[in-house]
Length: 102
Image 1 (cartoon, one colour):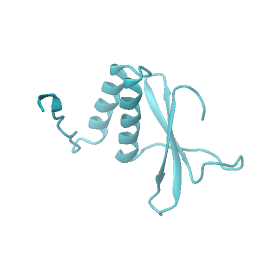
Image 2 (image 1 turned 45 degrees about the vertical axis):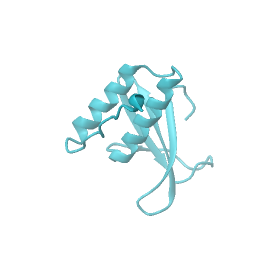
Image 3 (image 1 turned 90 degrees about the horizontal axis):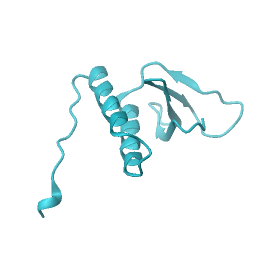
Image 4 (image 1 turned 90 degrees about the vertical axis):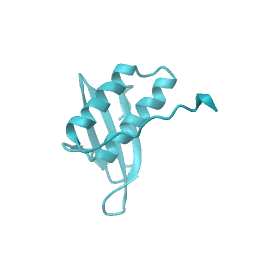
């Protein structure tokens, strides 16, 4: 990890052990990788062919936060949202509320 197009986060795995995940933007797709702990040269990154929705949502959150700082384009966010709906058709994004009328 370390390229500018990489986004990483730490999350508990199914077994309760902390895992480190990163998504890498390659061409027009995102590739996900994981490993059980963050440091150590002897620990290899394992490709994730079918990342769970939680990891897709972490990626989307990171893109949305990066967009505020102009690091990512709105098209990047739209593409990930579209991909989430393709992979998880039962998922529904929460409706946005407009707090500007308070």
